[in-house]
Image (cartoon, rainbow, N blue to C red):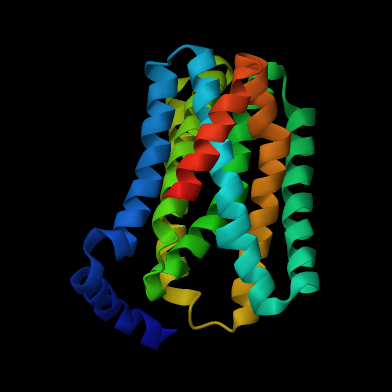
Length: 250
């Protein structure tokens, strides 16, 4: 571990020389964290109409469909096989599902449930998926950039809608504080994934990616699409298609 920390500056310098910002983990970490903080701030102090928030949330959901399939689950199957990958995938689904049930029971009303549910979604799947994105940067993978696009759109829209709902029950600064902490954790996950995942055996890299994919799918089914449809109705289908095509073509 000490050797990895010593080598980290050299890795960063090398990435900066060969590909600039597009392969620099600090850029991805800061951008991921900033999307959460900015989205939450907008949702708290300058929230747009709810149907526009919902449409953006659906765009992010469509983006994540591509990422969970091609950047998370498929590489995991290639590394560790379909059955172990499926097991970790289901573990991610169960983990988020249990947390979502807990939040539903603890919430006082629908706005609190939606707000904390989206926050839990980002926190649960954000750590492993951002760590997985960081690991892609070591090999200068072209899939890292569309993955970042999907995360920024989704995380920004989730934190925006969550910030609007959480403020009704928790106050502005308490809500912003919760999202600021999550932004720091998510940003740090990119760097940790860049530094510590690549040297691990393929099995554990595949496990992290599978778990993240399961958490993403569970959040899409339990939080993102239901919340988006509740506010925007059938228009979310077009918004989802835009997110899917944008990420796939990128």
